[in-house]
Length: 208
Image 1 (cartoon, rainbow, N blue to C red):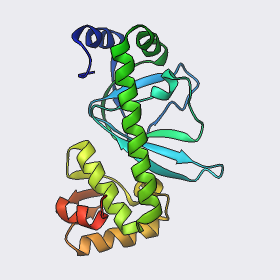
Image 2: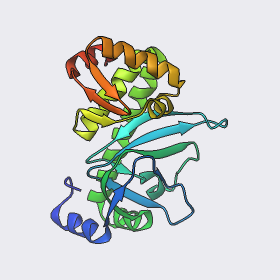
Image 3: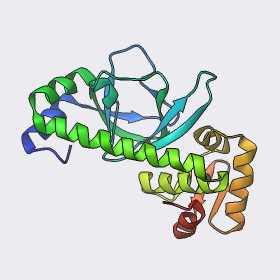
Image 4: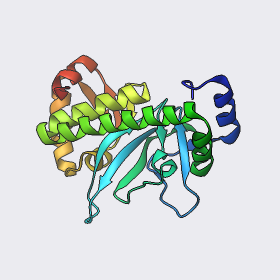
């Protein structure tokens, strides 16, 4: 919203309603009218799921990002899901309303295009990491991204959740997290993860 002229910002704000997204919530999973979410506090993982219902995260969206733009473009895919990782605030409006606004206001259409290009680049980076990095490096990268996106080094992430995000077995996460803890990069207890060394995590993640 902040990228738009004042008038367009006002129109968007008038069409939106405040909402709190809950951890684990699957956005766009019902048959109601498609919605668009402007994130301000919540973080949302972009998930790809195959025909065997096995999924892997291919991106993480947070403040200043938008979820549901595929509905505005009328090009949604059943294999792409959006699952809330961190509980937080967002603004919500119908995809139909944003589509109508974009058709009549070029500045809104440009903002949507910039956001879609960001997500394309974001997903491409994750696809490369899945192919080239081992589980420990991928875990370090996801934790680092989670901290940056949520703007906190204290995360509520269970091993089961992390295994689902990375598309691996829970025991693999337990082993990888244990190795990162031995290196003094993090501590964790009962789903509470405290990141102790962000620069060390970045090295462990072999970030591109």
